[in-house]
Image (cartoon, rainbow over the protein chains, first blue to last red):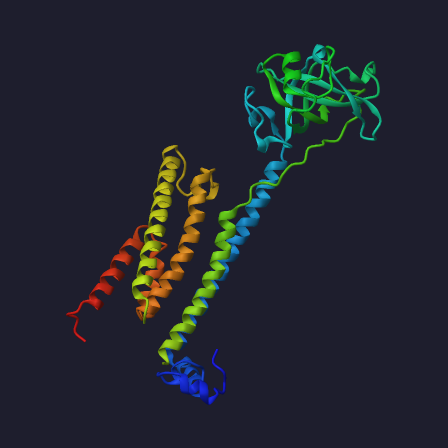
Length: 266
Length: 123
């Protein structure tokens, strides 16, 4: 702050105290250096190093916790869960369930098939998507989008009989074309209204975009890729802030040491 | 040094804010652990299993982290103005991390300032 050589006019304006009390003069620096190597300040330096080291380690620990929590959450979000465990049959799909990999076990209801018209295959060829209700055995039903066929009459559209275990990505219901008039067994959008009117009120919100089906049937519709984008898992802000705060506390300790040394040598 | 009343007020506000938040969060933690243990779980398992907690509970700890951050700044400022030594300063600063101790520290500092400014004080 204070210039090394003050011009006389400035010095004249300066009221008391002696300049050495404020700036770092050569004499002051010598005093500081001498004080630093006294037993008291050497001991305090050891305490300071330990305190800063502890702050650095504690900050690193919280930083590691942040990373560990994030990766554990990502692993958990990528692990398929039973669709019944995510939300109840009469509940809307919660936001965190959207895009989750899910497993569902049950039997396809052959008569409930919905042909979703004007849908493209993975390669962009016009055709239809096949949405089949899967009765989960608890009275509820979930739609499974089994894939794409070029033509409704395709035998691949017929669902396998017997128990199946399907795995796929959970999609929210589609909300477009609410006023469309759909001939029975067909739809232009996979809305809750369409599914509930076709399958009854125990049809669950949303549907599963099929990725695998067991036992595998010989003839299946062509798989279509999921279109849903999933957000990232919640960020562990608490641990992240703690890491930052620990490191800043280390800086505080250095500032305190410097300030006390300064006051002590005055 | 000048500005002691202002610094003391800032410190008082932060001592109460930090103290109330830490007291609430700490009491809540004790309740959560008590519920955990009474559900037939192992005490240490609470920390290793890290069960899901209410969102507000985590927010409270985040807020305490920042409140303590400000508490440190105003505490250091006041300790410098009062020319406190290292021991007293460190005790005052640490009081913000121990439940209900920031109230004690504030009470102590307040009494100290009163004593200093008393006109009968010998000097």
